[in-house]
Image 1: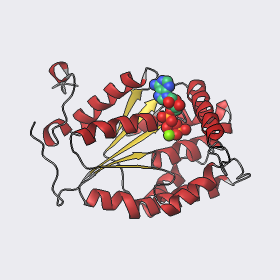
Image 2 (image 1 turned 60 degrees about the vertical axis):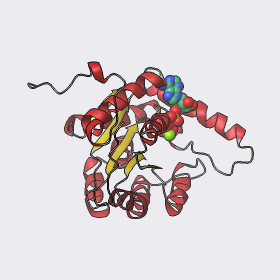
Image 3 (image 1 turned 135 degrees about the vertical axis):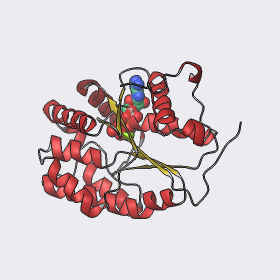
Length: 249
Ligand SMILES: Nc1ncnc2c1ncn2[C@@H]1O[C@H](COP(=O)(O)OP(=O)(O)OP(=O)(O)O)[C@@H](O)[C@H]1O
Ligand SMILES: [Mg+2]
């Protein structure tokens, strides 16, 4: 198969994964990365909060249950501190080098969790994004939609297994998982509002099926939206029956 790996003068592609805790973002991001790497494409896999040495320290502070009574605005500021470092150190350099940057959570998470969940509203989030992130937006965001109770249950179970396995773990990542059903309901609603507002960028994928079912949907979205099939040689497993853009909408 002919592959056209982007030259260093060509800017890379920025794709983010969003959704509730436990909906399967990390699982799906790895699966997509596997498909892209199998095509010999230059992929960077990263996550927020975190993604840099400094950012991972901020992540620990933000997600550790021992961090108590963090003011919502302080939480918001820490999310953006991690992000500004991440953009400077990982995302921008990756894009400049022509890589496909796959990021587990980005500013939409802040709008959903701090804006929606913590009720700070979307204005401060978008204003800070403009100031601190140079208004860098992904060209594609995959919003994995799922049921609140099911996702959070999964995340809690996953974290329990993780903590049990790691023995003397100094920190856990359960701080958000301890929030109420109502909190995650607001997070989900905020996500759906973003998708409605930014339908060009954000594609909602049903995350309620098996990992393989969800993966197929995601590969198809990436292939279609980013035209990776032509430019990068990413073939759809079902390309023979893929629904191409209809001429009328
Ligand atoms: N489609 C699926 N069906 C059932 N279980 C799944 C599915 N996808 C992922 N899981 C499992 O659910 C748990 C959470 O998945 P994952 O860690 O990928 O979610 P996440 O969205 O990255 O969560 P977080 O936001 O907490 O990082 C994991 O144990 C994973 O193996
Ligand atoms: Mg994850």
